[in-house]
Image 1 (cartoon, rainbow, N blue to C red):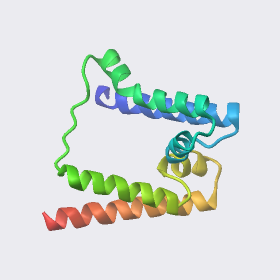
Image 2: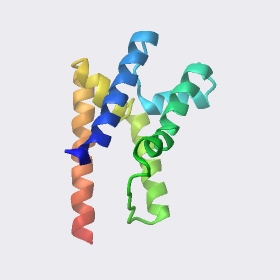
Image 3: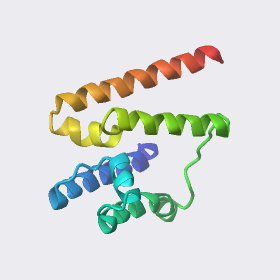
Image 4: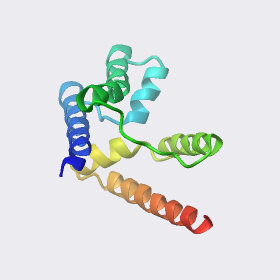
Length: 135
């Protein structure tokens, strides 16, 4: 069970921050929207605090557990950058990202968020299957 504690703790903190933002400011905690508003100059203190909180996660993890988690990325940097760009375009097309739709949208029983989350998951499964097949 100890292997699951970091993920469980991270998930609970993510949920807590999403609920806090909704209750305190009435906003959905969609990361792409928050970063977009920050870059566009909207609600700078609130959006900057949220982004700083996200960025401070890895150092806090290291403080709590003594080291960073082991992560291996087998893809090339150009592929990682292209994937990031595709995700950014997709979040704009889908009017939100996995955090906004998957965490708060589903909790609010939003039909649009259910469709978006199902699409995210199906596309991820399809791409992972395709990449495994091409290996």
